[in-house]
Length: 321
Image 1 (cartoon, helix red, strand yellow):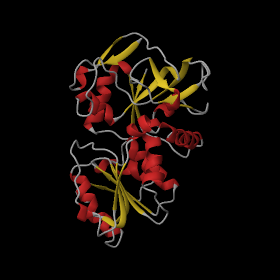
Image 2 (spheres, rainbow, N blue to C red):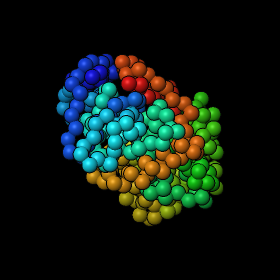
Image 3 (cartoon, one colour):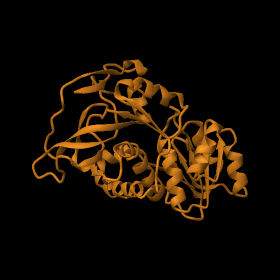
Image 4 (spheres, rainbow, N blue to C red):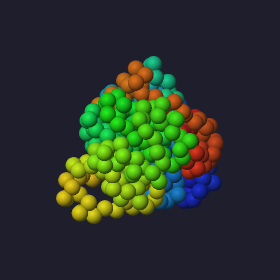
């Protein structure tokens, strides 16, 4: 089968489009014929060695959409089922194996292209909004990297939750129109977000801030987080650790909560199934969408990675397999 592998860490040039053996399933697993897989920032970190220890050859890819090709005996899935999944060893390939607990059927009305765009970003965002951040209609919230895949979902889910004020933060103000069309009330850049948040909240600060950047953005976020507010930390695209002191939280009664979809897939996969069902329903009903999707052929994976690293895009990047 065709696949993209890497035998060393490095820039996008280490990604090699080649032929490898089709994987075999074990007990409670399914084999899926990939239609589309998405590119996530974790792939960039894994490729470069900033996140993974890695066993080579390595296949990247956190999620996928496709058709069930082979099932285990007594499987809840059937050959031909249309599904999204979090694969066992990566999804930059024609076929991938996934544990049954991390495979979810999708409605016929949802295309594979649309479906591939949302497993990681929409499932993660739903949990962040409703379980970790526990946003309320009366809240003012801040969403960092608001034009990215997760940011695009967070803005829309916050709008569906009727959040009072949604402030999106972007690296390039040219992305403001896109984020506002998704439902943000205000869009600002990182050099002005603190003063904007304080101005829009009568100096009280935001109730919930979603931080996937870390580094300086984490400490800056605490400068505009309200009493009893919550900072939700779920990534570090800056490549730097975010820091805060105990004095930043105890006297102000503020909270810092962390969440990792990868950790949850590994240790608590049953938590994801009901969320996947809800997200699929939202997409089927047109309540959620990714209006800007950039599609590359699997053989052009290096171009897809270069685009993500340039940060000169909005929405989601997919690979067509």
